Amino acid sequence: MTGTWINMAAIIAGAVLGMLAKKGIPRRVEESLTRIQGLAVGLIGLNGVIASMFTVDADGGISDSGGLLLLVSLVLDALWANCCESMTGSAIWEI
Image (cartoon, rainbow, N blue to C red; front, side, top):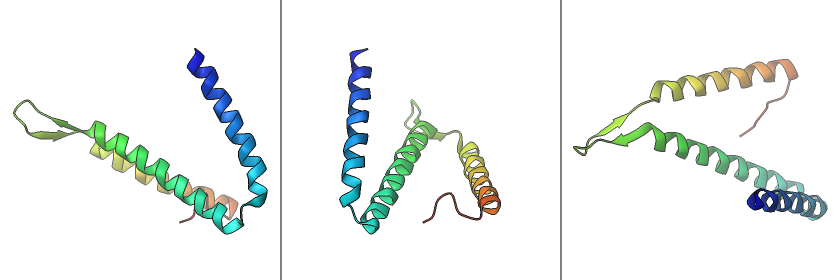
């Protein structure tokens, strides 16, 4: 339970520091940091998916599962993003 409180305090402190420091960060740097954070989160998520997809058998062979689910999820995400973009006129995420 102590870890939860420490985590909460760290998040609040980081948010306050970010709000204070935001005024001094140029817009270009802020956009770059946002893109880098998005890329990092995506790679962490992809790493977790791939790590749980592949397993090593007792005889040393590699087997996979969930590849089709990953593909369907990515397709649905792209469709959802295009749907939201056409409704709002702006992209949810831009690369």
